[in-house]
Image (cartoon, rainbow, N blue to C red; front, side, top):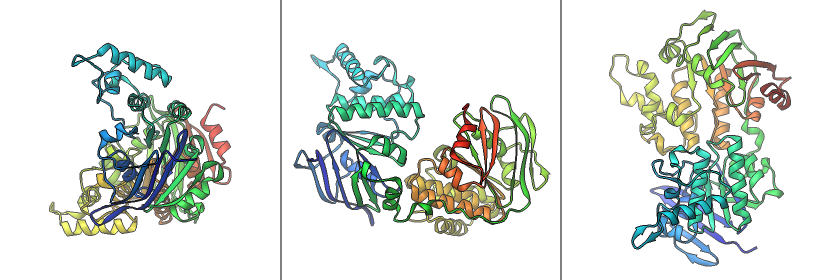
Length: 493
């Protein structure tokens, strides 16, 4: 089958860093191609080249067999190439119809043809089976509906190539189903869709073909039906899948963390569990089960209405996160970008912030000591960065998560609470997070790991605690924990 869009030997460097060394990609009409790779593999750079934001240093791009140079974003749109970004690019104060035609509003005698614009917007939304009013303000839409607006915007310019860059990262299961329904509709109408995702279940659900990048180089491509998850992971990271869960199993020590009948009105009730030294306790549950709310109470961000928390047999009074830190508790929140790190700050400053009492005992910081600490943790967690001064916002998602973990581990806590620690990061970064978590536990500390990913829960946990609707619904030893038993406890089944 002749490809609609072909990229051959694409190269791109930024200063001395090579983002793409030899990238090759084919997109076919009426097919969904999944682009897979670790953070830093070159996926985002490729998307920016296709959308006209970057120019390649070498290689060739062909559209319908003709060599092209995509001059800018408007030129990409004119060529029929459109991008649906992970972060919804819509104007909340404008209507849906205005968002669809924001760059090319229908005109009549140099005035905006409002009626025509609304009618055309309604027709496009019907084409996508979208059930919201084009006159509605975009700010009233859900995240999934805003994604649909981005797709609909592409159709106003008769897009032939639609690029979806991690579109499901913030969507619920039902919203993902809606997005996939629309994606399949685009495919049936002849669009070539490039779908970028870290989630293998999505790749096998929606994609016809796959392409794998590693370190800016194409390392594999083919039909999804002819491969499996293990082979894709091997191509991505260059190592077998069993190395993604480097869980060490050792001897457990005495009880370190105990939670007794902890409750917070409207969030969770009567929660009790204990974690021993050297142990990883996994907490599983569906959205709304109360897991993150429990973690926030354990870290002193919220206060329990009743119950108790003990560390080493000592009952704690946690009035704030500062109290929790003093007692040796560290917390990695689910949202690393707004709660876990200060993105405009450097790696050095982020790692220093929770450790200022040690770095500046007399109130004056020694910049060299801060930099040395940052360098130690950059090396320990294999953070891909130019150095301690690099801003966290310029790192990939997986490396941002490593910085968040590093800043807390640098303080040598006794209890580590991880809330969705590998959400939205690639498999290589996941392996690194799993390794440092296992090593932390092996040093005689306690880990509470909240995760929605069953493979992660099953492979990394010594015991699994299941929550449903704010209450404890099961506590499984590792030998008894199966996907079926855990899901059954987490649902009403």
